[in-house]
Image (cartoon, rainbow, N blue to C red; front, side):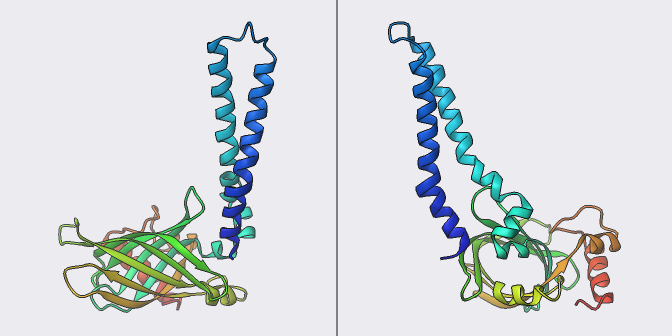
Length: 240
């Protein structure tokens, strides 16, 4: 069992019970401070609403906890993969992608981005959430929706995308090189044409890279001129 799943089970089977017990105790404390003869429906409603609010706040505490970057990176080793990535893709029509991997509000992570054609124009987009992390095998799997983008820049033809990041290889390389590259594979399904499968190689994009490429607004969707500057900068650094 990985740490995320362990944390999830502790939350579902432990913390929810604790939060319920605390909010119930607060409600009982408030209600017992008023004699039964003087206890009105309005007071009962206010006490109930107050204890319910306390219950909701307590339920969100673990999410606040794991959304603090330093704490999350200490708890979950794979969170080192979060951030911006320029991807080399083994597909002639879409040889590049820009992606972003980030923590969502729950227990999971979101992996999304845009694919670019050889001229630097966006050609496809995807948005996926993690569905499986196997710490032992080193696989981190994401599933979501994908869209091809037509010449007008409008998303068309919805498909399903499955992405596999080889997280264990990244952990091991990251120990010696903070800019280690991350290998993976993608599969696009349910398009009108044949399913697409390809290998990918993720190259870290740092704040210094955005600045050097003169890109002020970090985004996975860039105009062709900005995307070309980013590619040229990464190549000049020998990272592509």
